[in-house]
Length: 182
Ligand code: ADP
Image (cartoon, rainbow, N blue to C red):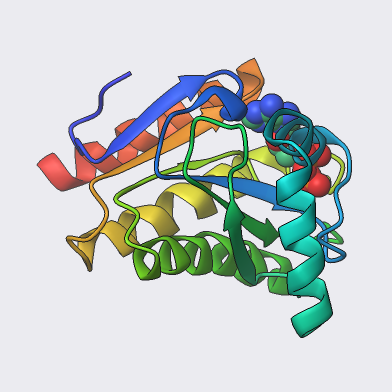
């Protein structure tokens, strides 16, 4: 689907199929794999991703909430996987800031690795239970702000796995674009 901001796209589907420079993984702080999108990425990408994650853990001891780390993408069509750790929702403002950090730090890491295209899942909206409307608002706002401040990223795609998120992102992206156009 296209929006007036032609650097942002939206699809409903499986992020492991996306052939972009980087795909983002909603990881946990151990970086050693889990369920949801994390499990799907490790399954489809193969053991090499976990091997690199283990090296990162040995070097820096995991990944804190809001931070990001990068590995190869193994057998995936993408070149890199950016692993970021979303906040577990517990109803605090700090959670919103950490979720914004995930998007910002993932984009910056992609830029640092010469990626021009990056795909995001709906971080924290699965087992971490972040409310989907608030998460969509934070994702769209943070990405839009980042794109306005750099010409290094050519395309960001939000990959929604469920209808609810897809509908929310459609609304948010249209609102953002209307503001830009007006
Ligand atoms: P978190 O722990 O950050 O909540 P989850 O993996 O449980 O991570 O969920 C994050 C989002 O990823 C959810 O909206 C979930 O529906 C979605 N998701 C699960 N599998 C995939 C996939 N293969 N591609 C894209 N999104 C996915």
